[in-house]
Image 1: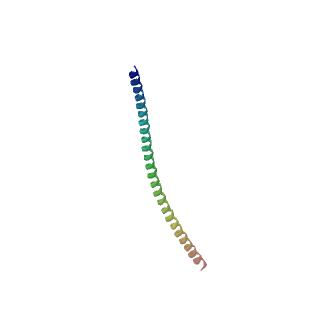
Image 2: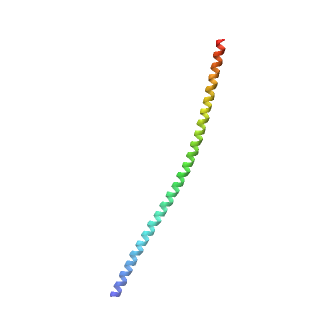
Length: 90
């Protein structure tokens, strides 16, 4: 019986070891899935960041063009007002 008991104990330990291995593999697989999802999210965030950076650059360029146009309009208004004053002073 001692041999049979030892065999049963060994089979029981082997069963527990297999269960532990299966649980470890399942946890590792879950971590891998999580890491893949995180990597995909980081890639989406980087794409969004690049898009936002481009939009910001475009907005800054447009703001600069508007500022330049504003200065030109202001300059022309000053010139027109001076011309009108000169005509009225005659």
